[in-house]
Length: 269
Ligand SMILES: [Zn+2]
Image (cartoon, rainbow, N blue to C red; front, top):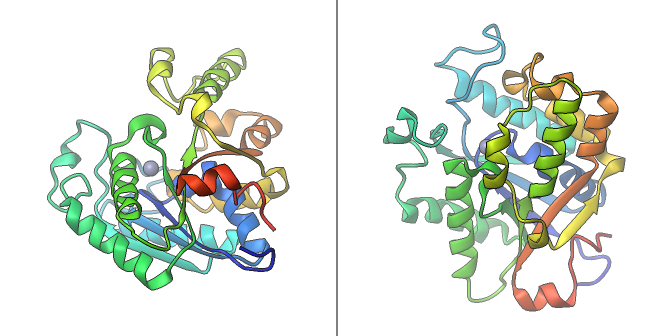
């Protein structure tokens, strides 16, 4: 690919806001540098807690969260936002896993057909999605990871660069310690630390996105129904939060020959 050629990027995530913390800076940079970005969200995030009951009802939450993602992407500069239309499956082991409309209950072939049709239409040369741990193991993150990976692996030609968005284990440990030292109750228990996040040596690509932290924060702020003003991240000192948001981590998986030659996200122009 020449320096001038623009990338066609498609990111596949499970819920509105999954794009924000782990890849929002990279998406903003891609857009700023003239690359074409599409965000695809597999569910409408219609099961999670509603931070403020004045913002949405259980019935219209799906629509409100779709609009929040559209607003977030407008700030990031992503013009194309799509939804695969599944219902959020909720956390592992909850009743929402059993809803027939949920991503959890979907037929793999059905999910893959929807992903394939977007790939056939947009012909991306770079795809971003969840890593094999799903960050913290949410069943929808794992489903999106598996289905996107399966579709890309089945492509015979024009296979795109496939990147997984990673959250390194050591960061979860440091974040837990930093919050605890500051008197903030972390969003995960100490006993969970061994089971969440990607192994540090799994990460292939570490990106400094400090120039995009303001955009990233403004974009994240659009997910109002998911922002808890009394939650642990709201209690953090703004400069600490900025520091955590300044670096993004990825694993470049396919095609492996491309990985050994060059890492396109590390050489963005
Ligand atoms: Zn999610």
